Amino acid sequence: MRSDSHRLSTAPDGEVTVVEFLDLECEACRAAFPAVERLRQEYDGRVTFVMRYFPIPSHRNAQLAARAIEAAGQQGRLEAMYRTMYETQPQWGDQQADHRETFLGFARGLGLDMSAFVAALDDPATAARVESDFRDGIAAGVRGTPTLFVNGRQSSATYEGLRAAIEAELKR
Image 1 (cartoon, rainbow, N blue to C red):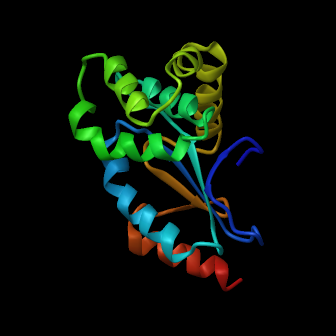
Image 2 (spheres, helix red, strand yellow):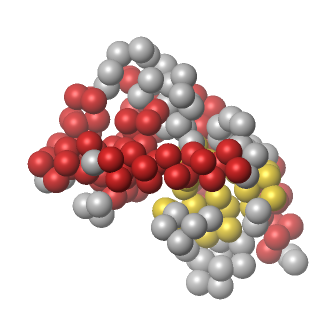
């Protein structure tokens, strides 16, 4: 985790942190999304959950989706865009068509300032931010998505496996 990593929730004591390297176009990531959200609710205030980008190069819109979340985040709507991407993934994922217009529609739907959103979406610094997470993932041994770490130890992406890893860390 870096100081600029996106925390979806923060535990005041900071003793347990779950970091997920994800690809927003990845069907397995979308399948893990409800489990992660359930655990975020169950461990609210006790566990920090962090999102890191790992757009798989063969997923045509994964990099763009990550940049869209980053751009929405600059207007305080990172989590809203993150949720929108997963909730709508069947409409745009696993396709070879460019979904820039789809993502612009999501931004409009969230009430974002569109000129600021487009500027951020196309800013090389936004792409660099996504690439930084990707490089960190490679360095951490991430080979696919979703890859989750609990206090630096790789964990299962299932609800049961992730919950067991969290419980083990809370008992330390």
